[in-house]
Image 1: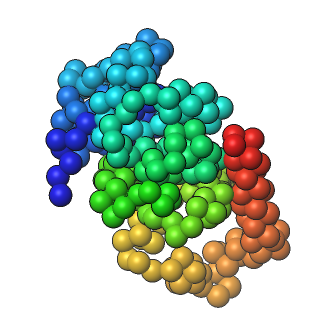
Image 2: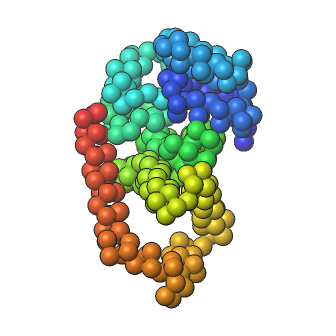
Image 3: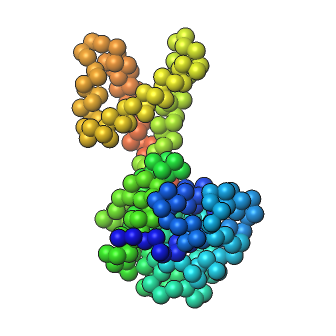
Length: 276
């Protein structure tokens, strides 16, 4: 099904909003059917630079009143006031509202926007800015099959879109994929520094580390092989890889990862309670 004749509105013009606009444009969605509300002139200029045909406004109202899909791409602390104002406005019947604000629950959104409003909560991640993201989606009971397909179309323009069977999983998703890129960046930072300490020039250390990370991720994704099996295939008994992995095991890397993701999940839950 083609959605190119539908007007998609975004409230907010920050990084994630621009990622979605870029993704929609690359998917062939007509620029004149993409409307963005952003009060900051500098941010509007950044959005406008993506395509001269985009419709921009400093006011939320015109965008909200004309969009078949309305994406709330704003910070969690700003969203309640914006959503309450939108709830008091006339908007198209059956308008699908998608929120990418971390921690803001479907229950809170329903209270602000009104019972019966089709709502989808989305947790994207930073790679969405280059079209390589993964987004987790959770829908309210008011979203029918057609609404789910439409939400998947919008979120899928920045990478993969995966549905959650239950919204309660969103805090764990935040810990794994929302915050996840930072964990890999941290490991890459440490590998580069260690490589330099081992005598490699900085540019070579960086290239080897980054290309290795990219290649390893591609092997997992493209061969559909479990990471553990791939690790075992690289690890010869008594070899160099085994020596390195032994150090990780002695430092209880598995336990550290478990503690880190649990801390992120708990913090996500705390932020959700603060935003409700």
